[in-house]
Amino acid sequence: MTNVLGPEEKIGVDGERLWRSLHELATIGAYDDAETGLVGVNRQSLTDADAQGRRLLVSWLQEAGLQVSVDELGSIFGRREGTDPSLAPVMAASHIDSVGTAGAFDGCVGVLGALEVIRSLNEQDVATRRPIVVAAFTEEEGVRFGTDMLGSAVAAGRLGLDYAYGLTDSAGLRLGDELERIGFKGSRPVRLEPPYAYVECHIEQGPVLLREGYAVGVVTGVQAISWQQVTLHGRAAHAGTTPTELRIDASLAAAQVVVHVREMVDSGRYGQLRATVGRITVSPGLPNVVPDRAELTVDLRNPDDTHMAAAERDLAAFLAELPDRQPGLRVETAQMARTAHVPFDESVQREIEAVAADLGMPTRRLMSGAGHDAQEIAAIAPTAMVFVRGQYDGISHNPREYSTPQDCEAGVTALANTVLRLAQRPD
Ligand code: GLV
Ligand code: MN
Ligand code: MN
Image (cartoon, rainbow, N blue to C red; front, top):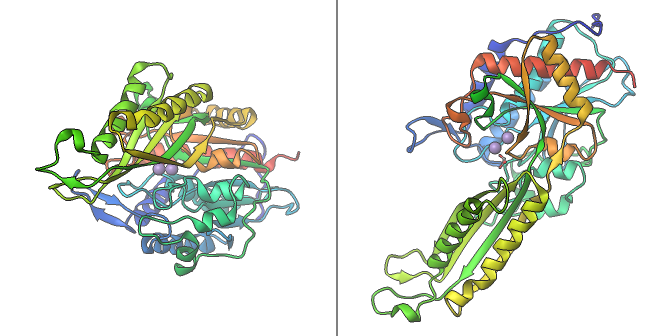
């Protein structure tokens, strides 16, 4: 590598190569989505599809000349050496696991975008002072094992490795066993040495950039997230013969929770609260039996920690009073995941803005509605994110999720030049 760029020089990326890689990865875990009639992606963490996606990623990282390692929780790292290997690296990362109804972009734009940064640096023969590390964190989505941003949270030290290994999926399979089964329990110590800086590129997953006409956004932080599992214990009874006043109907209680969290949102008392009951399972699940058990998840989001805490108290009080409506009902709750609002580093945000301005890209600052690995790494390193505009109202966690090739290229160009500038910094 011979070319050391001056502070004003910029690199371009190959948008077509990025697009091809995104779509090749999206063939892994592809399924026909009955609701949309589209081909979606279901590559949940530590499934066979995830393993196949990981193997493809590792092969690409190796082809790009990176030194690849896998940590004890399966997160994948690829390092490109700097001219001064003793300096802390700049990290660009995200995730390649998906929800069950995903498109091609969520997480993958960040990982394959970071790979594209490396491919472009290699092609243009550019050396950097600091090493650059590309990473893909395990179980960002949290949909299989119940805790989101898991790989990055353990890497940054917020959660423990044993906690992660002990998590189980809905079939009772342990995360630690699944990690071994797919061959991705690595030996790299899970606790991450703080990088010099961390930058993550991600599709916005919301409508703001599209509505306001920006291809790229600078992310100020991530709102608070609270996930709970609520289990409602009722009493199984005959649907035809059991008088209404003798029923302890778990599905009725579940419905009341669903309506209550929506009323909390609509009340306006909790600021910009969002509330979702994304999973309800009722048992025994038979048409002529009053359900004896309902399990549901409640996902609350709020940009304001005080409003979030107040909303959680409201929900707890409502759950505590549910047995008053149906004596004999028993309520159990378990916190699955909980993160406060995380503000990103001002200097990294400014660096992204300066890069975008130099590239002639107008940007806007916005807070992330979704959780991201960046919010965990922010605890140990200066961190910020680049958002890429989505289409169709910014829909995501849906096969309709889409960003144009041009917007992906714009976001990854901003990522590349931000990484490059950070990697040239001496301090
Ligand atoms: C991650 O996709 C989240 O649920 O915010
Ligand atoms: Mn994501
Ligand atoms: Mn997601």
